[in-house]
Amino acid sequence: MLSWGGICYIAWSVGLEIGGRFYEVSREAIESWKDTPVQNLIQKRFRNKFRNSCLSLKMGPEGYFTIERLSVLKFSSGIAKATLRALLTIGTE
Image (cartoon, one colour):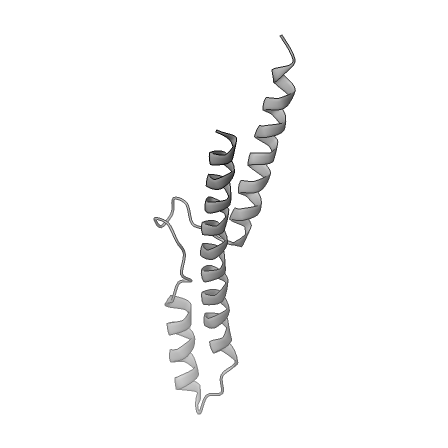
């Protein structure tokens, strides 16, 4: 039972990490468009409007749960807290 829990924890953490990296790379790509040279003011305005309309790649339904780099840390701290609390309550009766 404990080994299955460990396997599920590792698999979910890896999935969250991959999703977080996708988000981070897509956000950096959109931000890098800001630094590219332009020929005139009209082209710059059009590119900025297009850049602002693009969303970063996020895994999950929009507005519900999206995976970012911080999701892995939150998930790991939640598991650690729950495990510690469960271990502390086992001895009290």
